[in-house]
Amino acid sequence: LGTKLDLFSIQEDAGGGLVFWHPKGSTIRRLIEDFWKAEHMQGGYELLYTPHLANLDLWKTSGHFDFYREGMFDQMDIEGQEYQIKPMNCPFHCLVYKDKLRSYRELPVRYAELGTVYRYERSGTLHGLMRVRGFTQDDAHIFCLPDQLEDELVGVLDLTESILSRFGFENYEINLSTRPEKSVGGDDIWEKAETALKGALSRKGWDYKVDEGGGAFYGPKIDVKIKDAIGRTWQCSTVQCDFNLPERFELEYVSKDGKKERPIMVHRAIFGSIERFFGILVENTAGDFPVWLSPVQMKVLPVTDDFRPYCEDVVKKAKALGIRAEVDSSDDRLGKMIRNAELEKIPVVAVVGQKEIDSNQLAIRTRKDGDLGSFAAGDLLDKLADAIKAGKELRA
Image (tube, rainbow, N blue to C red; front, top):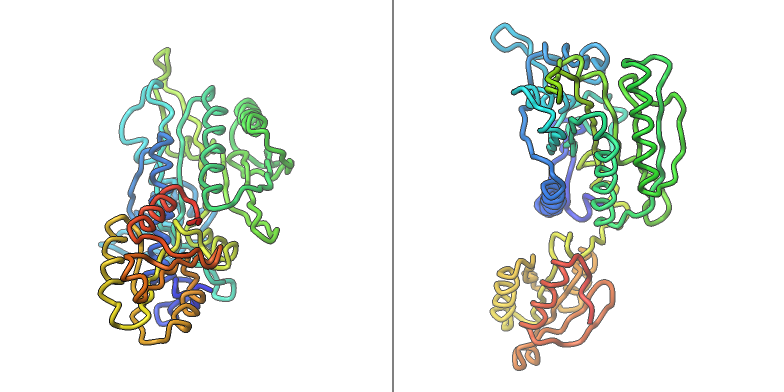
């Protein structure tokens, strides 16, 4: 579907597992990212941009070089020092947190980034958008006090639900993974973290399964699988407590009594990666995106070339209202133009003939409801713009 709808491609001349976003796919990605950013800023997150590579010593400090070396690309020599293209964003967020001494009054600190990472995957494991070598994580890290943890986790789950539901995903499978046999951190902090995770899920009213011993060595986690339109489940969101990186990076805050303490760090991703979520979204919708997300929201079809100036004027007014509209530029007959619009999965099609020009109207058909009849052009555009802003389909 990605190729058929001209959304993206994998260019073998550039190498496997590297995604090229075409204009239509880029439009959808931008809309996803803009919505993600707005939701995070409203949720109290600060947005970051961090480099794509760093000195190898950083990855040794974080432990990634020791524990994740097989998933990293080879290092590069720069003026006698080894640099590593990043497989993760979290060490960069630790450095931003550590850039100044924090007071307990400043916590929680919430950082979010659409950070592109690069991981080595064998060529035989690469698969479309689902398994690639370069991808953008919707990463966020929260640094908080122990007694803030449960409230922060509830906030993460609320945000997860708000964002996923916008894209039509409202049914989830939840897993809570607890302390494995080998782990870092004391019994007290593990117990508090697991209690906070359970408490957050309880406050959400979400049923969940417990994977005893399935957590990472550095903390317990919640995994969210989403169900698509035909009942398939996809691993998507993760919320992970981390007791390891605050120790490795010596992250601190000054407590109420003046002592330096370690914050609790929470990793979380809602989409997992933009590429994989986009692939799931294409599968779930079969490429028939809701009107607010469609790269072309309205196509105007002139019955003959004589009516093209009127169509161009309609498109100009549509764009002024924020509607992504275009005129069919082919010399096909009307039936073929309508068929092509259906194949392109255009949500709204406006047909213009002599009757529509004489009455300053548009004959409208939608993918959801078929022919809706004729509408005054200005009224139709206003109605469509309102539907897009509300995230709804155009109705008669």
